[in-house]
Length: 254
Image: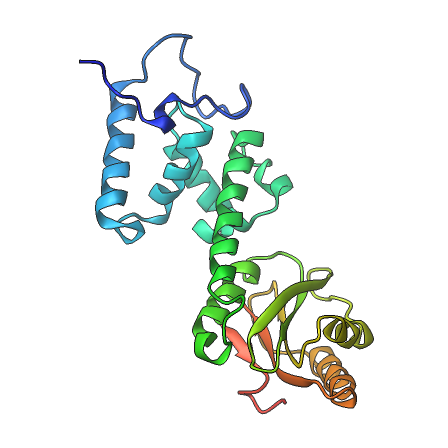
């Protein structure tokens, strides 16, 4: 009986010849049984137990299988985790830094960035067009997914309608490792263009500590004043750290 090949088993690397964690197999040769069996076991464990059944390095192996279909990817998975800390850190790492790791080329970078983009879109879909109050935990999860591992500061504005439904999520600016330029006039101008009634500010601290700086507090006060002058409500300002977030509203800063 002819064996039906799985789609992933049949795919070549997206880019040939750049990932080199081991010597490539000769053309037409079979995948060694120890690699084939290991991959099958990982897939079975993932399908039966979900992602909780696999540690970070094995989840990363599953992603790397697609980019490097005919080599042992375990050493590369561990090397990436050593370089970037955890699974999320690997996915969020800039392409240029990823390619500094021996064995990482365009195929690996592409696979990692596809997974990262999918995670962002899935998290965003759980909050966009949803009532913010009733989906607050999902909103925090989305902000963590999108921003917690960024290596430079990013400032985003979430725009809400009169019923507090999220109608837009827009990146306003990107900065350096410890500063991002924000222009209050542009923030409120965009709210009027979207016919928004309220907004939530979000930015990340690449240091991992979400404690707001004096500049963060001053900027928030300026945006609040500009918003109130136009009849807009500033609900909150969230500062995203590596493992937790800080709410200006909860801290009494708004």
